[in-house]
Image 1: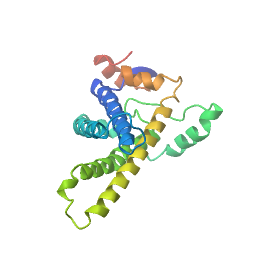
Image 2: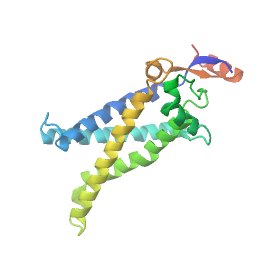
Image 3: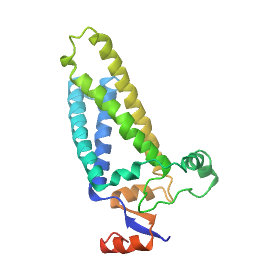
Image 4: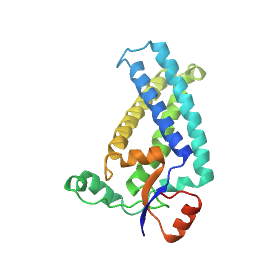
Length: 215
């Protein structure tokens, strides 16, 4: 099948991606401040900013979940049964030897098997832990009189912090992987313009030309 530049990221998808990135940066920055890593702002101000960013991100994710379910875009995050080993080998070894990328994007599958698995784990494992523990800490007054409240608060705070560090690791890996295209800015450009090079079959070409999604 031919490789053509097609619009694979919608306007909402790009808005969601960059808004999410900005809010996560605020959460990480204020989170480090709340733990005393830096004192660039007052504790109360950082706490307020942390809570506002968290609520904004939660609202954004609610809209994003609705969008993924109604548009069918959730299918792009289903991990494939084959190809994960090849992707791991490529990023651990092959990329440094100049080997070709083992995966070619298609209109129906814009994430490679390793990406899909990582994004799925982030959405269904890491994110729920962050939200549940974060909301539990925010509404501590609702359960502070329980006999296990003191120990429970420490445990919840530890889990929340550990999950936040895993988020930092995920973001670092995500940023690194954006530099592994044909050129350093290929994948970054795709998330800005919405267009990327993908395999399309003749039937898809007709549909993409009709919707003006080909370049």
